[in-house]
Image 1 (spheres, rainbow, N blue to C red):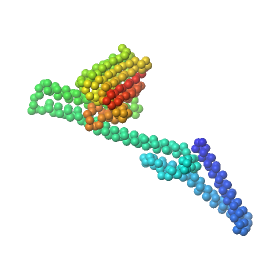
Image 2 (image 1 turned 180 degrees about the vertical axis):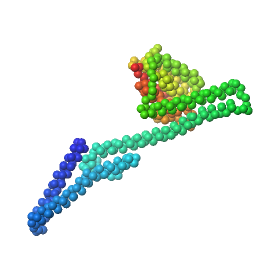
Image 3 (image 1 turned 45 degrees about the vertical axis):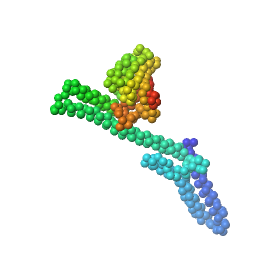
Image 4 (image 1 turned 45 degrees about the horizontal axis):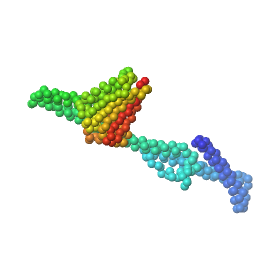
Length: 364
C-alpha cells in the first residue's frame, strides 16, 4: 500500500473513531451518568451539555491524532537533522518504532517507506563518509609524495648546475657532459610529472572528457616500437623486456600519443617497482572485434589491497618515504586513457608471483 493511500485510510479511520467516541460519550453522559445522579435537564441545557461533550471529545481526539500522526514525523525530522549534522548513528527513540516482535507500530507503519529510505540513506552516507576520508587521506599522502618527487630532481638539477657554475674549478669535458646529462634526465623526469598532472586536470574538468585524435595504425608495430623505446631507457637497462604477437598486424584506430603514454606508464611501472633482471613480457593478440595487449612480469607482485586501489587517483602503492619515481597518478591515467578508447583493463597480481595486465580495445 502506498503512503498516500495508507495516509487516507488512517485518516478515515481516525474520523470514524472521533465520531464514534463523541457519540458514545454523549450517550453515556446523557443516558447513564445524568439519570444515575438524578439530574434532569431541559432541552436547552441538554443541548449545551451535548455541545460541551462534543467539544471535549474533539479536543481529546485532536491531541490523539496529533500524537498518532505527529510523533513519527517528529522522529523523522530529528533523524534528518541528525544526518545533516553528519551524524549517521540511529537517533534516540528509534526503538519505540517497533513492537516486541520487531514489527513497526501502527503509527510508524504509516511512514514505512520514508523510514526505510532514511535508514538506507544513513548507511550510504556513512559509507560515503568513510570512502571520502580514505580518499582525503590518500590525497594528502599523495601531495606529500608528489612534493618529494618534484623536490628530488630539483635537488639534482640545482646541485649539478652549481658545480658547473663554480668559477674556482674547471671541469673536464666528459665531467661537464655527465653533469649536463643528469640535468637533462632530471628535467625530463619533471616534465613527465607535470604531464601527469596536466592529464589529471583534463580528466577532472567539467565534462571529464579527454581530447582524442585517432588515426588508423598497426597496433602490433606500434606496440613493438613502444617496447623498444622503453628497452633503450637507461632505467630499463637491467631488465629483460620481451615482445610477442600472435598475429602479424592489427589495423585499428587509436590516438598514438595517448596509446604511447598508456604503454609507457604500464611498462615503466613494471620496471620501477620490480628488482633488476625481472622479465617483462608484452603480447598483442587479435580477438576479432577486439585487440588485446597482455603485459606480464615475474616480479614482486602486489598484495590484494594495492591491486584493489591500483587505478584509483592519488593512490600510491608505496609509502612516501620509499623510493618512487611515480606520482600516484600513472595507473589512474592508464585506466582513463583506455576508457577514452572505449576499452577495458584488468590486473591480476600475487605477492612474489608477478603482475599481469589485460587490456582489451575495440577495433572499430
